[in-house]
Length: 603
Image 1 (tube, helix red, strand yellow):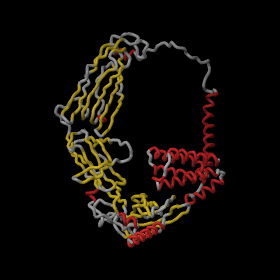
Image 2 (cartoon, one colour):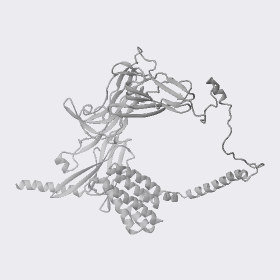
Image 3 (cartoon, rainbow, N blue to C red):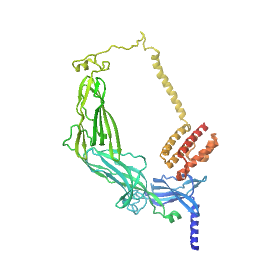
């Protein structure tokens, strides 16, 4: 028993020693090759704000800052450790010294230790070759990455006819914890017409799937429907993406807690590519192909109707052809319709109501023709047949139209195109209708004799107005140049306008309930507004300078206190979002009101 108490005592002493160090910088490797990825992390075991990372110009940043939070209990007291990590790759060889990061704790700025990285010569493409499987681009692993992380592209059919609908999906399968995606490259679908299934939000939905007894996390990145536009053997190129996953780290534990509770995790980036897909496209059969076939492939119905079948000459009537079905309806062209010679016709108005869902591309497409018969009589529109190819039945199907008869009565003589006599030959109207001039029956406005525009007031005004306008333009141009010569004054004038733009971005994050992005954008909007409005350089932008300059500008102490409190809350929320409460809408409205108040008091 006495020995157990002694061991517990030493554990608590070591834990207390660990808590005494507030801000620590660590690296997974101190010696790396050019292009080799490694991780740096900054650990803070107390609450802080205004974190500033050292200059990373000598590195490519693959991921970060990635935040993790650990809760610990010692002697009944709870402590919180926040870690911000970056996944980096050096750009050139040599010894690189990463300066200390800084953070504000209880009003004081503390700094972490510096890190020295020895970068050796190496090939970025093979820097991790000894530690990773082909296709990986990150931290060491002895696992078979190809079995644990891959992209699968799937098509509903590999043998189709030209124009037939094909479903294609791209899914990521992983046994690691998904963290995100970057540099996604989808194929161009050369030789295909494509339509993507829309997603309801920007968040990728993750599900579980079992393959050969192994459970995978599955994320569907894209679902599309493609239609081959030519026959032959067409190839769909692979999809490529860099996938960020979280996996157990092989590095030594950073503190006593990782030693007891199983070590830490780190983010890794893998370059993954799917396989190419070959599609065999056969031409449409020539046998029994209807003469009026216009490329429709799928399953369709057709409805043809006239708005009315009894009208007077020179009145309009509508012929509407409505196609409904599933397939390449977006590509279907207007049917060829032969109208009577005495009808004046116009190009059809096309209306589409097409939806792309997981079941395919379907909807309606309407062709609306406007017709104007010019002479009385009984007319018949030639039969309008709609033909399409049913890919499932492998045959052409023709939908006949109903009989379309129009009875045209004698039109009104007051109509614009009416005739003044009933000709024996309709061709006479086309000639005589152009040389008849009707007597004017409405009031005619007469002008006094010798009243000319030349020499009048309006005549000379036409010369003077452009000259005066040009002089005014020069005046306002010079005034604009004078006002914009002072860069500081211009920046100050535009501060409020720029703040509104940034607040609009924060409002979008508010609507999506993205707390971290909302607070980050809100903080940037306020800081940039103060920097522009008060002409404070970025290096001097701290709370003490802001408070001093605002007081000199006669801004009330209450407003200054509210501003500093808002900045503190935003910074705290960025690094400990789970600890922040309150209505985001109220916080957003209060910030907008705060900027308005500052603007009014400075004026």
